[in-house]
Length: 225
Image 1 (cartoon, helix red, strand yellow):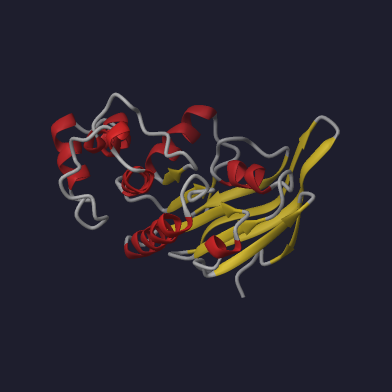
Image 2: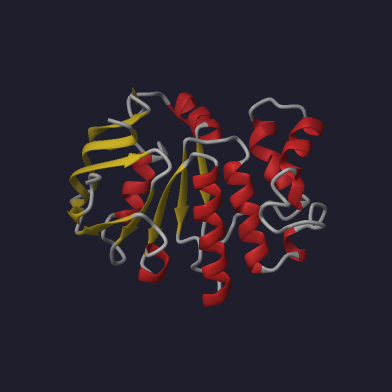
């Protein structure tokens, strides 16, 4: 079995609301999986549990055979910096930093010297079509360019899994199409698995498999065929 990330019987409650009700999900190496469902279905809660952002009330999360939900916050925080990458709907780049330093940030937070981190960050600008934009600040980038910088930041630590939460939600259709193509191609080329939360079937179509979430339950697709 070559599952990189697995959630077993994941349950999460917020007061009387059951956000996840015993969900099983597994993701294989370099596989792209879309998590779809209406607002409030539990898809973002599932992502947050798989990524170690929140702990499930019950169940287990395993990354490369290591149980991560039982870790303390400091260990999970280190894991998110090194083994996971994140792309959010609005990029969440730091406006005061040039693009190359935004990309280098996870490396610097992990203890890599600034000059070396920036050198490694610059290597991503060519493959993602960002040549010449290394010193631009986020306010000087288009929405699509900013998301490509966010993709570079997500991949710069060579993570095992990249999580993307509505990565095209703030983009027009054409730019969103290009962004998803780059995201899927870049993660696969680097051997990373990709988990995309989306409500858009056009975004989900870029992935190898779609997981349907409704009322905290998986309707289909949780485990690879």
